[in-house]
Length: 224
Image (cartoon, rainbow, N blue to C red; front, top):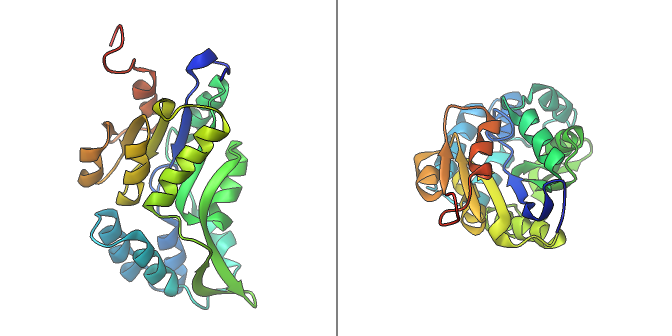
């Protein structure tokens, strides 16, 4: 596989909530439903790995039942990119490295962000809407830990890049599968359980600080 950087092209997949953006979209949605405190508590338990992601997702989304679909426009306006996110994505594009977003959040919110950044590969959950209101359920399979790892492998296979040349960036327990599967797993502003299992941890820094690790020669190679 050749690209702007030659045969050393890498595939990079990122989490969205608290990685590419500064907050958790489910909590933003819950703020409009009056359930933010309960949802935040469930999110924290899931991020620490205390409950499985699918269970936590269903519990949190259930609190959104009855919200008008227009709330999605409100939350899109509340989402903020993490400092350094645009610089990182622009640099990856410059190198010709395929970039994907894999999110436990929702296509309805992630897709416009991906389009803005020029990212064509997105895997996320979908909210069920009936008669213009959220039902409190999701449609289709949940994007959990295993689904994220599978998405990484899918994007790598699409571009003919070996898994050893893949990079995963995330912050929560739901990212551990893809961090382990990737040739390079980077924990970004992550929980201790995630930092302990990643190849590298980037803390209290802009997102493009991960480039230091992307550019380092693999362990055991000449110059490493």
